[in-house]
Length: 313
Ligand code: SF4
Ligand code: ZN
Ligand code: ZN
Image (tube, rainbow, N blue to C red; front, side, top):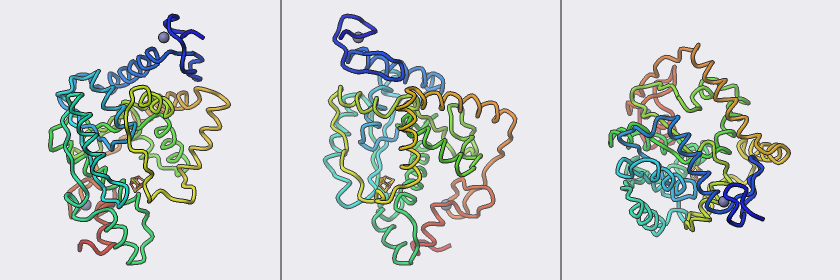
């Protein structure tokens, strides 16, 4: 069967949401064109500096690869964090990531929780569980990662910090916040996010309109070697995100293109709500000075360290 776009090469992929059979080249070009469209919408094309968070996973490699073809690579800085998880973080991974980014012409800054926070993730989890707290490793990990990425963005004077979240991640986040009734978080999702504090560097997600299976195929066609080992902290019991993900997969299977449709409808709805909503400015954490939620003295990260007995207020 021939490719529906070029008509000259053998089709290798069926893209259910567009109902097209594509050859490898046309598929890669289609992804690149969609990332470029999104990057343009998020104002990335004129940015002086963009910090991209790279874990070494497939989405971060796809992000680096596509963005380096859209924006001059010397305006991109990659940022990698070693969490300090025994058996999961490996030195050869960082080396491979660094070599690959070098080929793309992107500089890499690396840090670790140990260097920047004072403790590895394993130590934080151990200390909090010794105090009888029931805090998931991902709560520490996600919170500190966000904080360090934002801080690194500020340090290099980036106009944007970019993560490799894909369409599946984005729609899951929308549904989870809808189910929790978290309107403030919901309104922060999107392509023209309101800035709640001067200390926040604008966050962007150029892959937010690309399906997860598409980033996997892109990485496969490009021959990327990516982190495939599963983090030992991934919960054995299904999390809310896993349940939502399964529901969304079932929906997408019945109506191909449903996820893309949900995101596009959400974006236009959120945009019109934002216009009429004043969100104000966030207060600063008394310990670290970073932005915290309305009504809180300390940020969530400092609260976690205080309750785990690792710092004192
Ligand atoms: Fe961090 Fe592992 Fe949780 Fe991912 S699964 S957020 S790497 S602790
Ligand atoms: Zn083709
Ligand atoms: Zn703090």
